[in-house]
Length: 388
Image (tube, rainbow, N blue to C red):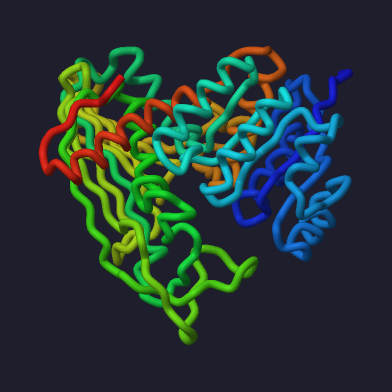
């Protein structure tokens, strides 16, 4: 097959930039139907040694500390942004002005207003955008969406979504940029709750109104060493500084279709490691999924099995979306990096077909509107409508 090439620049070579680089390099192995040939042209990081190490590891044509070089490079048609949030707007703006397709890790903007502005810029420039809401690509989540769309669950009545992660439960977890309002904007609201909100939108529909709460449990952390480690790094000694955004967020929500629910996220909880999860109930059945067991889906459809009135555990197999691209065997599970690879495939396919990508900046705006209402509710301590 003759494929058209597209040059790729990845900006920010921490954990997430590496995950994107790996996905672009391997996407054709899993999805040979793709008619675009991704080429790794440039990788960027403010720490020169990390940028160069990534170049050698993945075979980028060059590395640089200057992200503007990627924008100016005519060989690059797709820019992926995996930097701290405070750098997103400037880079995305420059990429859009240069007419390059843009994939930006969530939450896109440091604030809801920044996210909305970037979506409008992308819309006006007619460039294709993508956002890293990767949990929706799990085969069993895709199958859950299919069951909802087909009406198998009946009329939806309840939705509970959460993301509980213990990465910051240790008081000696370093003060990475994620804990600093100046660099990250909000804390758990931007980081974990963005996934929770997007999943709720994907499965249930738009939120209409909510009332929310927040808390910061650990108010000081050790200073991080620039360019070393991740937000999972623990450092026992050294100076500490203040955490300036929230560890915990919760919201009672009412969806536009009348579904009642709750959304919750915490980065400092003890116990769950990566519990990105939902429970969904309808008049004819119910679904339950947890990323910690991402290749399973709990399904309750009593009308289909009257002799087994309870939840049934399904395991992912080649009959579920995307599974067969990785292996033909039932219960031979996929992992996190596979979701990023599916994400890359979907984004590249949207560019190939010149069609809007989902999730793109428009979906990020929908999430940002909910985040904005949550922040307003923190101040008002009352129910707030979603401003559409």
